[in-house]
Image (cartoon, rainbow, N blue to C red):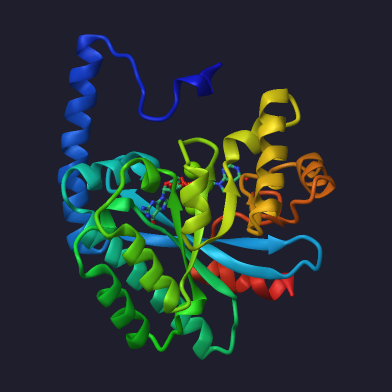
Length: 278
Ligand code: C2E
Ligand code: MG
Ligand code: MG
Ligand code: MG
């Protein structure tokens, strides 16, 4: 099964390896230029409560339209930004764009609920994250409770100094935390209970195959049950088919994200979509 190989785990022949290294180095250079030129932008994918059809919020997803290679996946270029010490700067640019969008929507009288932003664990290093984030919220007249940070289980596997303090400090400002791609990493259930997460996100790779693979189905069901027991929200991502939605609802997961309901959209397209939706 292809997914057993996991992300970032490849086997190469020497020439392929050289090519891959060359590509990453070139992308690193291009990414630096893109960051300076502001050539990265966010798209927004709704998170929907399928019981009352309400939009709970949107998730910001980063896009890079490379001048010669076209769109490159954030799954490829975020790790490059991380290994080259660009994640602090890039991360704040992302947060700033997300806050600016929320501010513009509020000014038009549009309440989208919560803005979710994916955060790399590296962004939490150093003592300035909380301070800078609160400054940003003030600049855009936003209260902490309109912001949600999506962290993956990496945060538990690669512990950072003062992480408890950082997360709890942010939680005190009303900022929410969602645990992304749940089940793909190595979570400590103990930490999960003690950290201020309010939501578990079932990874899309389980959702994708849950109707054809009984292991994936068991993982999905167990995650929903775990969330219930820990009194956390549970949301499924990557829902593309009606049958998947029906299965999730049947097992008590009503919060959903996926192409079936809405694609990630630019701010302009999101506004048009909202008019149609409501
Ligand atoms: P993620 O946070 O788990 O995001 C979900 C991914 O699934 C997104 O891919 C989204 O476009 C895609 N998706 C949504 N609905 C469906 C669906 O129904 N079917 C399928 N097949 N896919 C769907 P994307 O935008 O390529 O992002 C990939 C990953 O890159 C994200 O996974 C996240 O880990 C990372 N990422 C994206 N934007 C950012 C960012 O601003 N900061 C950081 N640190 N990471 C980011
Ligand atoms: Mg996410
Ligand atoms: Mg995810
Ligand atoms: Mg993912």
